Image (cartoon, rainbow, N blue to C red; front, side, top):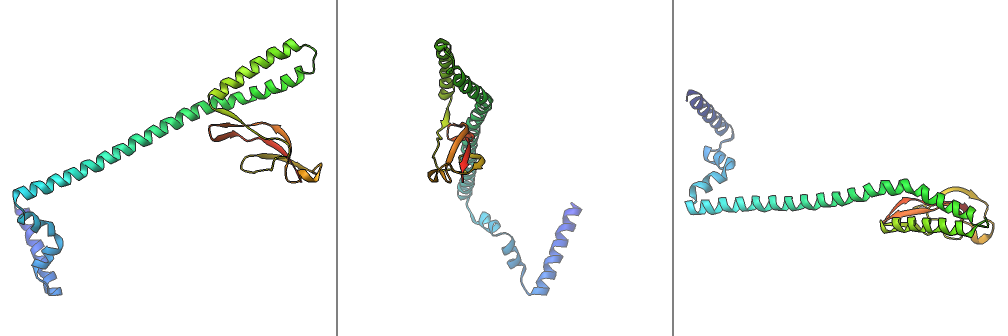
Length: 192
């Protein structure tokens, strides 16, 4: 109790000193500190309850909105996680697609057409399965305009014709997209 009295006395002394220095009354100092203090004294119990209810309702609405944002964000993160988890597996299978293409190219030179058809069926089934998971080939052919956002130029050579100057001369490695995102850029040779 004596500590509280001492604290109150010190506050009064400070207020009196401020009042003497600035020529203001303690009422104006109290007014600056706590306008809400006067309001709470003037309000009836019903009005006070209504005000408290409005504050709590505002808190609830803010909390609810924050929770909705949290749900939306975690849902999006979960979907992104599923996409990237599948992306790692699909990226690791891209060299297998390249190997199938090289094998088909070499087997087509041989006379055994049954072997070619068998490997081609397996290759098509494999590609179709990956396509169902969202993998798409980035279409690039000779004569297309070079776009640094899409293509990866591994070298530049003198253009064989004026039409191919600044355009793609050869595709060294296919590119692939998973959904809308390019997961492997096509490697191309550009004519200059």
